[in-house]
Length: 254
Image 1: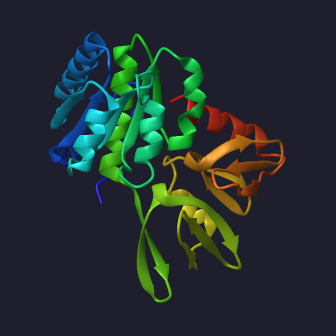
Image 2: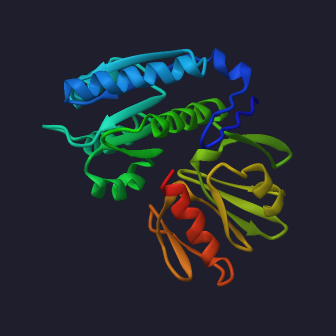
């Protein structure tokens, strides 16, 4: 498995990962913004030697039709405020099974940024877009494609391959752990400290001695617990709450 390291200000990408064609969709109903964002995206990809294919769409319907026709994208750069179907509504629909790649919202409406967690948005960029922030967002999402991080977990005498982005949380169970996915669950003999090391820098946080939580699924951080998208409550240790809050809000602002 290739390892891709991203620096938040300047990306460093494994040379082998550059062979992937990064399919990007830019969707914005404002012609000037659409042209500007796509041009900036093209320049960034060229600067980083990322092989890319950039498609432009004037509204959500055009993009949805393309996806329904079988076009696959790794990254969607979506304007939030669009007529008929805004970017948030489109993302909510796509997350129901049509698209599991990265989504970056673009808008002058900062209030909508708070809803980004509902569709696991990777970033929220305010208009007018700063090229440095777009640069960082693209590198981050490209890294997500390349690492589509997977864990090889020993289970029942065999090995199970799990996508870390689909793991909601990991809980200590006996001498091993229970790995809870969106749809399934797995029990492994691996200790939580071993799993924590494997998913470091992948959006997980150790909120309790017995729990590792994927921050993509957190909707609320409280004094003694975090609440996940599906309503599950995970305990937070008193001595960890400040660090949990710091890491979670730092992750949300990336």
